Length: 142
Image (cartoon, rainbow, N blue to C red; front, top):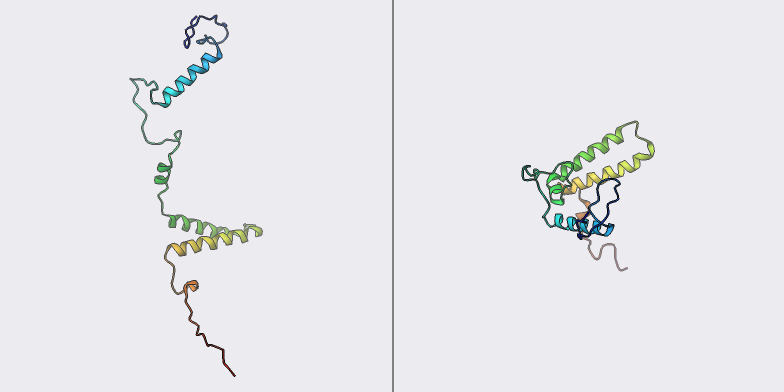
């Protein structure tokens, strides 16, 4: 038989499927060629079969752009959903007592994020309040 890679004559082993290559090195070389050709877009296609649809399916991984488009839901909607779930966990009597502190901390964090995204309420924003202090308050010379 002739090796499909180098063309050298070789004696097949008569075990398993018929050999195409004279050695492991030729088999590896052919594999690298096939892989390189497929990566460059030169892979074989059946002319009778239509090409696969371009929409992502369960077997195809999503690109980062496709994933972002799929997840275009409003972040505020997601935060509201998380807030409501956390509230349900806190109100549920079956929630373990040692989990309440962690859940409540996350609940407060999510509520603060929602508050910040909504623009907040200027009456409740104590951090933004500017207080003026006179330089001579409480100081008197006797």
